[in-house]
Length: 170
Image 1 (cartoon, rainbow, N blue to C red):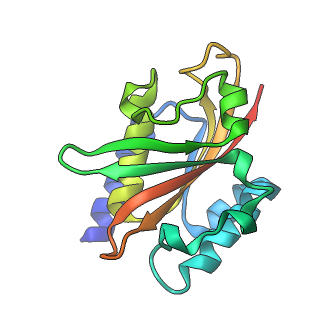
Image 2 (tube, rainbow, N blue to C red):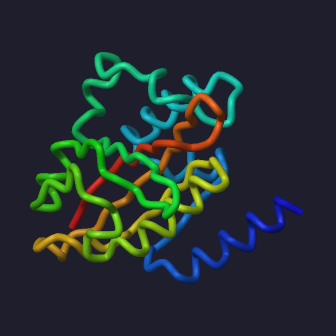
């Protein structure tokens, strides 16, 4: 039953969001990722170590140096559910023309669709990949981006943070 509920929620999400494509599932994500995105995804999978998702403490910045400019980290707040941008990599800030560190996703223009995607990822504790997303909150709105979202579980197993790893293009 839970699998059916998850699939229905994913179908609804696909209809609501304005992305070129939305991908879930390990093999599908692997096929669609760009090389640096795949490197980060493989690191996340290795850190998972048999769990549904790794914890934030499993990652050390020193092992991710070439990846850091493309990483953003979000915290998950409950009641009401909100997503706070804890860290935004320099590639994201430079490409968007704005640093959103410290802001909530729902405060960013166009962030409502990103909140829907993040909510799905948090609820089901599964990675997702979006491709062809318009950079709606930037004055550089001619750009699009791809992003792989990777949940991070807290000590109790519930998602309390997540990464997005981004690639920007015209």
